[in-house]
Every structure is written in C-alpha cells, then in structure tokens.
Length: 216
Ligand code: ADP
Ligand code: ZN
Image 1 (spheres, rainbow, N blue to C red):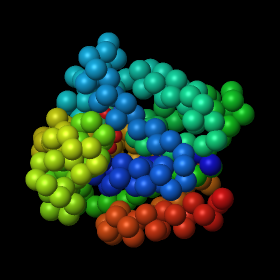
Image 2 (image 1 turned 60 degrees about the vertical axis):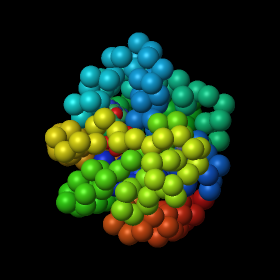
Image 3 (image 1 turned 90 degrees about the vertical axis):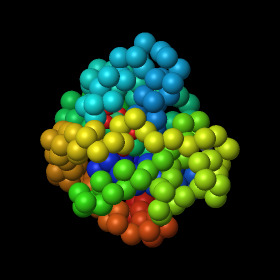
C-alpha cells in the first residue's frame, strides 16, 4: 500500500510513521529526516536547505521533489511506502501524482493526524530528537531511560534547530497556508482518513492500524 501521513508539526506523525513502517514492512520516507541528513553530511542540497529550515520556511519544491523521486525509485519502495512530510504544497502534490502515474502507481490512503495549536506548541518546545537514528522523545511524556541519551542507539539527544518558539510559530503559519489545503485536496479524491493526535501514542497507532487494515 502507498500511503501519506499528514498533520501539523508536532502531531506525532514522525513517531507514527516509524510504527507503521515497522508493522507493515514498508519504508517511511521522511523529507524532514532526509534534509537533516543532507545538512549533517554537508552536501550541496543540505547547504541550500538549511537556511529555509532554520526559519521554518518550506524548502523549494524542486529540491524536495527530486529527493523524493530518487527515494521512491529505490527497490525497497516497490511494494509500498509511507510518505511523511511530503507533499507539503500543491506543487508537490501534483508532482507526486505525476511521478507515480509514470510508474503505474497511485496513493491508496492519506492519514491526517489532527492536533490543536496549544498542544502543538507545548509538544514541540519539549521535543528532543536523536540526530543519529531519528528517534523522537518528549521531556515530559516520553523521556529517554537515561537523561540525554537515545534509548535505541546511545547517541546524545538534541533539540532540533527549528524547535524554538519563534520558528515554531512560523512553521505553524506555513503549515496553515501551504499544507492544510492538501487535506481538502485528498478528501475530494476520496483518500483521506482522519485520526486524533491527542491520544497516547499506542492509541493513535491503534486507530491508524484499523484504518489501514480496512483497506488491505
Ligand atoms: P515538522 O513536520 O515537525 O515541522 P519535518 O521534519 O517534517 O518537521 O520538516 C522540517 C523542515 O524541513 C520544514 O519546516 C521544512 O523547512 C523542511 N521540509 C521538510 N519536508 C518538506 C517539504 N516536503 N517541502 C518543503 N520543505 C520541507
Ligand atoms: Zn538514536
């Protein structure tokens, strides 16, 4: 199955994407993770993307579309994939439809994880991530077993550059303007399924799994 997971920053879509990927054995393709990796590796793409990401702006469509196209061409995406953080603009949604059509593929399900604004800010400001394996923690709800250390790989966990109050506000504004309209776009296509992101991680995953299984 080819899926998209959408939702505002902090909705927990990255955490859910990892669960879905593991449970259904399909790769989770996160543009945010791929871009942060490019920055960490100091590639040309990373250098260009960094200035946008630090401000909470969208990286230009062309750059993001190219990395997604390359990633979806990898053999592990042949039997299904889950896109996390893409598409985020109308241009990206159209480009995705086109790149899949060329391969005789289509999107089967779009999950939208909803979360109120106050909760978004509360979550993001207390979020910590592992720069090595991308595991996500929260200082109150999901702290690592040992303070400051990733449970999965033992690296030091950090606060993302764009998880500061000012950038969070901008990311929210950008989300409302560019990404939220895509919810309607996919609803009209009959692909949208909505879940509430306010529940505990396991319950959100249970809701998602039920939606996926209806369509398997
Ligand atoms: P979140 O959803 O928590 O805000 P992501 O890790 O998905 O975080 O994205 C972080 C940043 O990476 C975005 O604010 C944006 O600058 C950039 N980015 C990620 N995906 C895209 C995309 N599809 N198009 C443009 N920019 C993107
Ligand atoms: Zn780790």
